[in-house]
Image 1 (cartoon, rainbow, N blue to C red):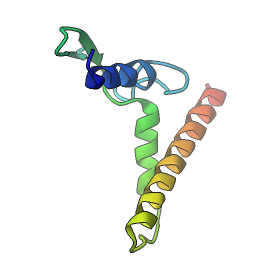
Image 2: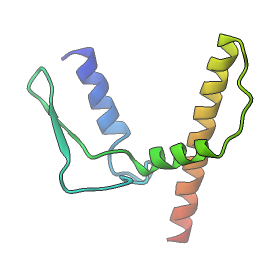
Image 3: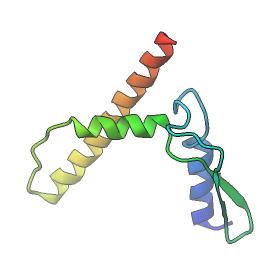
Image 4: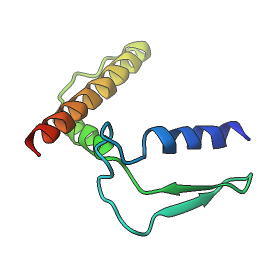
Length: 99
């Protein structure tokens, strides 16, 4: 199995499945997209998770000053991404408490 197929499988199995950690799918639909790999294996894609959606929404409200150096920008991007997912995880946790 190719490395690309393995990466897709990892993403599907660990990030895009309906689970407590991901919050499920943000916009579930009955017509999942099915991709066929070069090996003939089918992978189902149901869209972004609620965790991904919440993280994206958190990004909108962050205000940062972008550094000039490339290394500082990369570090900032990693920090922002991590923080966005921390906020998303907190939103999912709070949502579970309220249900």
